[in-house]
Length: 100
Image 1 (cartoon, one colour):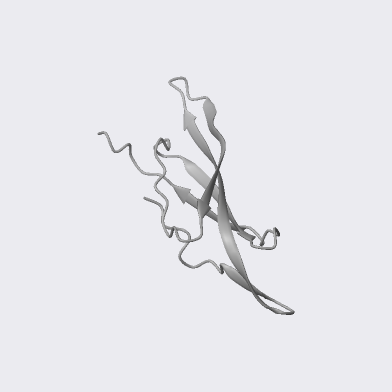
Image 2 (cartoon, one colour; image 1 turned 45 degrees about the horizontal axis):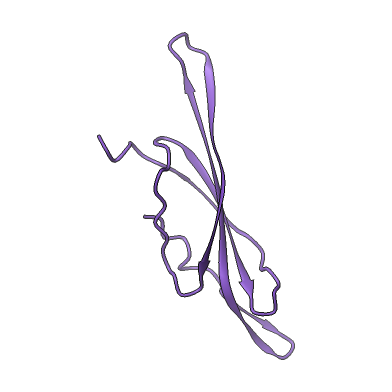
């Protein structure tokens, strides 16, 4: 489980008060570098994916991540006025496959 939404600023102040967040966009992509049997470096890319979740959701369970892969997550809030907040980026590295 990835808990990346807890520290985000989900409401923002405008000239007339606070604008509430409606939803959150989560985009992520993984890159895994490894060596094949002959010692050549290979790069495996887990393609970019996008999810939209509701403001009330404070954690997100993502299945199917590759083991030993570095993922970059970009998280942005969509406000009630239709505008988007700046992206919040994090990088994580997955550990071994949970099936082992």
